[in-house]
Amino acid sequence: MNRYIILVLMLFCAGSLSAQKDLNLAQAIEIGLEKNYNIQIIRQSEKIADLNNTWGNAGQYPKLEFNFRSSNKKDYNESDDFIQNSLTPSIDLSWTLFDGFAVRIRKDKFNDLAALSKGNTIVAVESQIQLIILAYYKALMEQERLGVSKTIKELSEDRYGNEKVASELGTKGSYELLLAKNAFLEDKSNYLTQQVNYNNAVRDLNFLLGVEESTKYIFTDDFMTQVMDYRLADLLDKMFANNNNLKNRYMQEAIQKRDIEMARSNYYPRVSLGAGVQGNQFIQKHDVAPKIDTKSHNLYANLSLNYLIFNGNANRRALQIAKIEEEISKIQTDDFKHSLTNTLAQNFELYQLRKELLDLAEENKLATEINMQLSKEKYESGSINSFNYRDVQISYQNASLARLSAIFNLIQSKTNLVRMTGGILSEF
Image 1 (cartoon, rainbow, N blue to C red):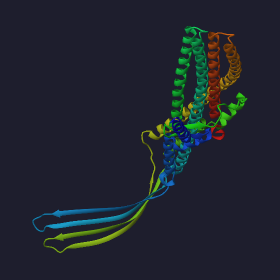
Image 2 (cartoon, rainbow, N blue to C red):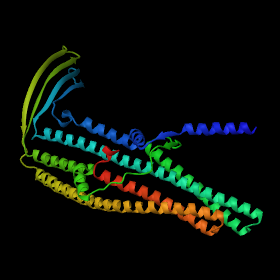
Image 3 (tube, rainbow, N blue to C red):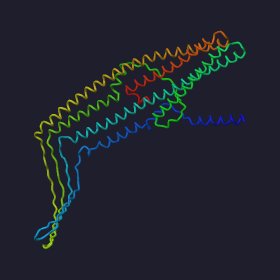
Image 4 (tube, rainbow, N blue to C red):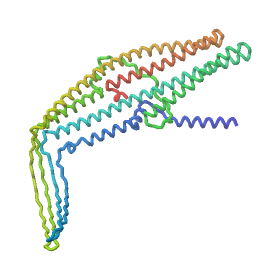
């Protein structure tokens, strides 16, 4: 019977492990960019901008229409009632030959809008990659924290077991046993809480990836990052050259210039062509007189020129407003560059600080780990009491958790720097 239960448990564990998927950071990013809903929506918006970017939408080509008009009339009078029908089909072509270069200006603006849409997609992809990176390493950190909590729980469990044996043998009193039990229960509670934290971190990652929230993984990347020696001047050069948010600001300035050009085009004359063919059929039926049925058709081609002389200075105001809006756009760009520079300097300094904090955390964790090993031997030999041993355990736990937080903070700062300097797409 016991063998049967063990076999069932082994099969259950094997099934649980097989349901987990290996996942590294590159795979997570690939899945997230493919399935994330926000990215899908932004890519659809990019398609709309591409569809609008045509010469036809800019007004380059003529417009051809088929028109049909029917007129019917019944006339009652004293001498002779009659019915009158008139049918007028036509094919009409209208073509603006010149409108102050507005067609070319509109097409250039559509080009800029399409480029801006692609730029917005790139920014959204960068943002999504950054979120996935942090969510992936957050899950790794919570997994490592779970390992630390498990280690502390097992040590407390061993200590509690030793205290129970000693109490049964009468070598120690119930006070030490209660202290050991309280410590074990506290550590077990922390371990269970950390399991929930880890599961929530995985759910957050699954949400960003656009997959089922219950999906489980075996994370194959190490919870560590390569420490880089950055120079602020180099980072600034890269940011001004490659930051995609800044590129979008420049594109918005270009679009504003198109509005100025469009406002200037209103000062030019308009030349348009109208041509077509029209048919006419006139039918008149009298009660007394003979029926009248006449058919005709005509061709026409008209060239018109329109030049606006005065409209209450509306064109002048439109041009002045466009120029003011261009100045506003330039000011906004300068403000954005200033903000980026300030943020980059802060992130750079924070990265330098977090590098040093990680070194300190590594040293502290190593020291507390050695101290805990020595204290465990001393506690088992009776050289130190349970109070001292518990203090050492807590110090080791705090140092281990602080080290994990220091690693994650450094990853976060590095990711911010890489994204601000436009390298997140190439590096990840």
